[in-house]
Image (cartoon, rainbow, N blue to C red):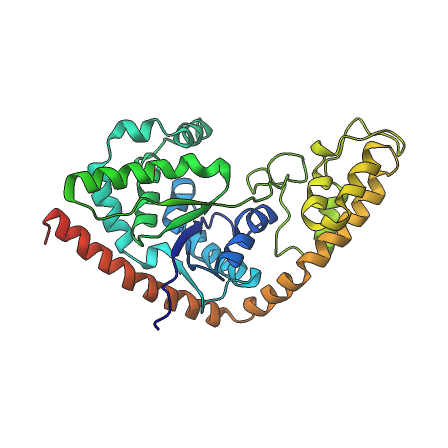
Amino acid sequence: MPPVARKRLLSGMQPTQPQLHLGNLEGALRNWVRLQDDYDMYCCIVDWHALTTMIERTDEIYENSIGIATDYLAAGLDPERSVIFIQSQVKEHAELYLLFSMVTPLGWLERVPTYKEKRDSLEGKAEASHGLLGYPVLQAADILLYKPYGVPVGKDQIPHLELTREIARRFNHLYGETFPMIENVLSDVPILLGIDGRKMSKSYDNAIYIADSADETAKKIQGAFTDPQKIRKDDPGHPEGCAVFHLHVVYNRENKDTVEAECRAGARGCVQCKKECIEAVNAALAPIRERRKEWEANREGVLRILEQGADRARAVASETMKEVRAAMKLP
């Protein structure tokens, strides 16, 4: 009896930095590692997307992509079970993006909340580009090119996929059934606060990185934002707003309830809490960091995996584009 074909999932990250932080690791990457046991994972490094914010620093994007691939492998993505590749090495992404741009009404793009946010964030720095406006169309092409069953997302990301489905519906209406309706593969992913209490982000300079050393991690956690109302050890705390407690929730799960109860009761101080947090975070990251060092020392191996991943991705993408051209009656 032939083996049952596994469903395909597609996801990706932008190489806007040379390494991933713990928000990326816990918010997405660990979930991809789990999903590769049951799905064919296509894990893309979407370097063309990075151009929307790095157009004056394009020389950094390729090296950043190598760093992101290194983190993918260090976290446990297996190139035998997951297709790991760089977006720009599969040129079919650009072709489908162009064709989708012809069938996507401008109004759809102007109403995308993330476009407005990114446009406003550029105020005084640069003009909003056509690429920024068309970002969701490229995202739709990235996804639909592989006709996946779905995309792994958290609940807050569901609206981002609706435009992809709208573009697929419009294309299918115009040219016949070609693309599937992508499913949201929901997962409960933790939201990690940065060390300043805001969302963890490179832009805020508040991130702990996978590649950080144990000492660098300790220094960041020691300086992390805690409850400003908890001045003395016996003051009752409010852990829900504390960046250190959010790290306990993820990395010290066995003791997080005790940590919370003692904090609220004024039975633990922030110094003790940070010390325990540092130990838990560094212990959890130690094997990933060790694998990262091994892959950093094997750059040729990383490049080979990316090349093989691009070949595998291209084989699927080229078949999709044959169908698209046939549907549109294009040569």
